[in-house]
Image 1 (cartoon, helix red, strand yellow):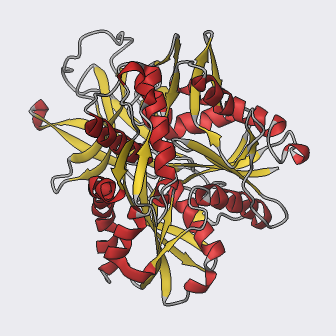
Image 2 (cartoon, one colour):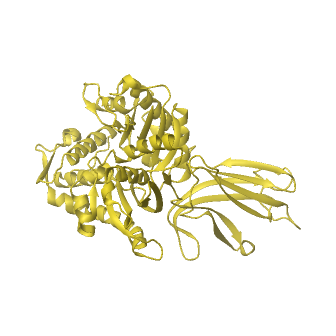
Image 3 (cartoon, rainbow, N blue to C red):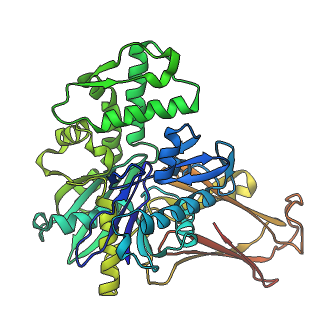
Amino acid sequence: MRLGIDLGTTRTIVAVHDRGNFPIVSFSRPDGDLVEHYPTITADVGGKLVHGLEAEAAERDGAPSLHSWKRLLHHTRQDEPLVIGSVEVKPIELVTSFLEALRRDLFERSNVAGIMTESLECVVSVPANSHSTQRFVTLDAFKRAGFSVRAVINEPSAAGIEYAHRHKSTLSSRREHVIVYDLGGGTFDAALVHIANGHHDIELTSGVALLGGDDFDAQLCAMALEMAGRTFPTSSQARADLLRECRAAKESIHPNTKRIVLDLSALGDDAPEQPIVVPIADFYERVRPLVLETLEALEPIVTALRDEEQIGGDLAGIYMVGGATGLPVVPRVVRERFGRRVHRSPNPAAATAMGCAILAADERDRGTSLVSERFTRHFGVFREADSGDRSVFDAVFPKGTPMPESSGEPIVALRQYRAAHNIGHYRFVESAYVDEAGDPIGDMTPHAEIVVPFEGDAPQESPVGRLHGEGPRIEERYEVDAAGVIAVTITNLDARRAAKFVL
């Protein structure tokens, strides 16, 4: 069984390859209703974590819960626990447990349960601006949960595959570029995709790590509370109920909606007697800056496309995907900027999962990769310069570096030098941008710190000091695989001693 899985911030979508078609898997709620998503939510029921549809039902019964935990992976270390009710859980354990529940429910409560096989081969997606810790956690969790992962692909890359599958007529020898605009529940990603001869090359990516449908929900909630003269509730249950009400109201908005009616009964005794009515025009004006922020993030891609020396050819279209593009103001503002070239997926929430399923089928049938990915962030390490007077950033894998194909050899980078200290203290970071001096700026993620003794068997907790005379020869060997997971091997060439770290 070949699947495409989009592990979303608010909803996880699964598409299946079925004889050349890529339908979305439906799951049965406890009340018998079918929904074309698996809620990305976890709840604490008596000290045990439950997920998905079970967690959604438990939350309604008052169980402590955590929504949108995927967002937390962007700035949470692998060893930093997350708290859900009375339970502390590490990120890898949380994601693994969630995916185990997803796998179980594919067999027990999905509309494809009757054709499921034990071997679940899948292509999974991650946000384009994910750092490699997120990618590692995602890949490792899928494997631990019993999935066979054929590839990990950036979300806009997957949407680009679905675009080519659905809109072949817009592509020609003159129009080979598509901009994917992916506004999901928790992140905004954009990519410039070159599509030619059935192959997709991701030429440039951009995005905002913490911007998505959750933020539109929060703005609607804030407006309602302001109009009611109330403050945000302190009870976690009341907050969850209120945000769920706002999310449901937002998702029911259509182009002819004039007002949004919100029941604030989640506030309990402090709830107003009458529902709050928010004029749709006021809500659109409130969230317009969020949409404009996506266009600002899109600007580097648009600028690059206009630069004939860098990227030639005309634009086939701007493809809008992601559940949050269902809010009418989002495509409206984008069309104000780009006109009729904007295409919105007929199933925006599922486009990424469908693209993953297409790739899962294609890789197996063709034996070649359909997509060429690139680094979406700069990865590097801070080094000492000017005899310790300042630090400089060494971009080991600059943004835009081509990634290895899923079946290919890893990309390797080497550094060799004489050690100046008795202990090597490495500070790795990933950054969305670097300035003219090569220093990381913008969305920067402290990635890992590694301490390695260079002189004898000096313990790692020993103080760092300069060596007298010539230090040993040190080699750093960096390898990145097709999933974007980076490993470094640090070798003392003189002592013939090495240590390997998966970052």
